[in-house]
Length: 130
Image 1 (tube, rainbow, N blue to C red):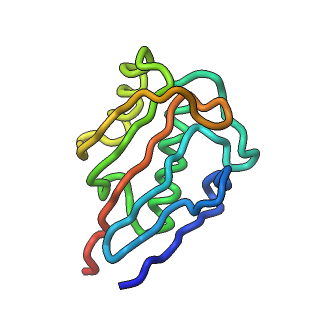
Image 2 (image 1 turned 180 degrees about the vertical axis):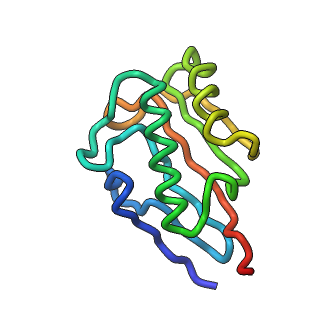
Image 3 (image 1 turned 30 degrees about the vertical axis):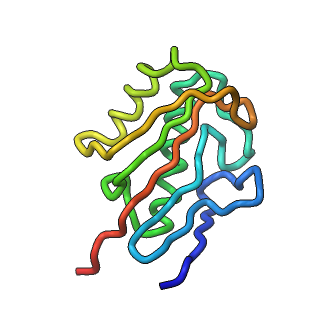
């Protein structure tokens, strides 16, 4: 098996030296995605809900580029700069993933790039060819 790197036009250009995702066999590992606008590379809003919605759109675009959807995610990690945002981010996350509930970890971090208040990374498994 070989590692394949995935980059998609529908997601913001990574603000560092990394790809949107890497695949190995059936596994897809997305880089952390925040609420950056794909066209400008800037944060869409200072509001954590708007950032969360955009972050999930970005993850969906990357997963699609790898042949997956949110329903194929087996693990997610959410990073927050303020745990006071936990419930609001959870509402956005639940609306995007329900009824699918992959394993998840949520951690507080001191800061994120480009004024991001949250970021999400995922591990997905490609569906078997039919």
